[in-house]
Length: 366
Image (cartoon, rainbow, N blue to C red; front, side):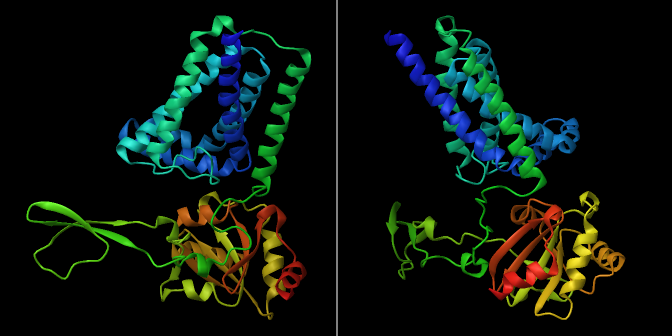
């Protein structure tokens, strides 16, 4: 009885964590795909060039992984096909442990995306979490003969339901935008404010004098001290946004985009941009001409590509360049629209849900 109780507690811990992790990422499968693309880039350079081929399949791979996390977690807790589930979770956690160790040891991908954008972990924190899970799953593996390999019919139907629901949620999030936005550019955020520290940054200065290290809260004026290092002691005061910038050949336009009323069309790579709904964006751009709302284009592409798109669509707007990573963080749609009023994010739209000019004007009029 004691053994079964302990095994069930382990099942609850492991299954609950996998469900929690999977649901967060089902909310944003595109974000998981972006993270996988980073890994495939790194592996193609460091291990074997064929990993680059997986980049084109990052999204379906990501959906498979996040849905599997949810379904296997449900199976583990409800006791459905436990021996298979333990094997599957064991293989999955070995894969995740390798990824997080590689990230931590080689400092390649500094955020594994284990909990999406909801909970940020350092590479070593992620690795430690995976090692703990590996140990717990190892316990279940050692005692797998004590685990029932079947479950009641209602549990099996619950597993099937979790599979269908997870897939539907993932597809809906891909075809629209994440249900819950955990990123720094979510609706309601003042980007201008988020780019500033929330409090004065405070540092400890590690100095050396007479062969011994000392820690000071102010930089010494005594020249006999030798500087060793400086450590930020209030990291929570760092700006939430540190890399937002847009520019063109004439210079930086970051302040300009954060002033007044802007309807920003974000594009990552022109070659991968979806073109099926550009007519609705055409209508929005044309309908905003002459109003107090300025449509602009920001793309992680060359000036020639930006100018070509504006000319081809006959948009009478300005085009600017931006960093691809930043744009993909801002917008999980290529293209996508974000409405900004004096630096505040009013609304974000997937290209499938492009607003009409009247809808845009009504939002800015509130």
